[in-house]
Length: 202
Ligand SMILES: Nc1ncnc2c1ncn2[C@@H]1O[C@H](COP(=O)(O)OP(=O)(O)OP(=O)(O)O)[C@@H](O)[C@H]1O
Ligand SMILES: [Mg+2]
Image 1 (spheres, rainbow, N blue to C red):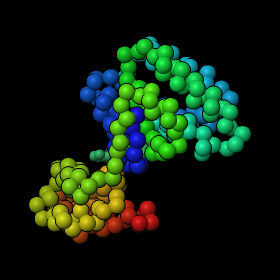
Image 2: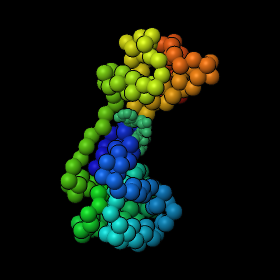
Image 3: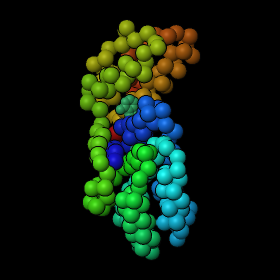
Image 4: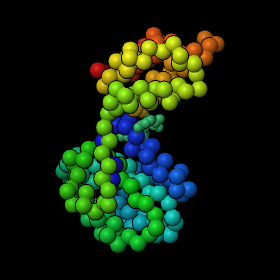
């Protein structure tokens, strides 16, 4: 079970696991499943678990907090309970060689019983300054970053997730290339990071 704020690498981890294991990644968007098959979610879930027994892979149940119930409309609570109980039961009976991964931004919405069923709970957090710099250096590695003032860039990245930092780097890289240079300037990186922050009202 992977828990933590948006953009900190939960989905990325599931695809990295699949890549490293040489297995296909199957993603089940739980909130979508519940909304789409209201009333028959539990039977759809059974089909999914049957598929899990048959094909080896990494199965990512994303938006897992949809099983939390608290964010659901009152009239759907019964349905969510049923789905949750089915999920626990299917997980208990699971004898596949696959890997079942759940991801959520809202662990507080989840029943304690759920955490116990998973072998490992991994917590993700917003990047430290060192990590923010590492993410930027990695994303901009194909370009010339010799002139970048990393401490200014790290300052501008404060409060942003790994995903936002990555996107800002991509933005700065595109601008550089449009200006027919491979050199990243601190100012343009800082502007791109500021834009991400404004987007989140920070
Ligand atoms: N820890 C990280 N290191 C490097 N890049 C990262 C990291 N986390 C996220 N990214 C970048 O951000 C992108 C989006 O991250 P990802 O989809 O894994 O976030 P998430 O935790 O699943 O977010 P959400 O809760 O919104 O689904 C990744 O594809 C990657 O480019
Ligand atoms: Mg995700």
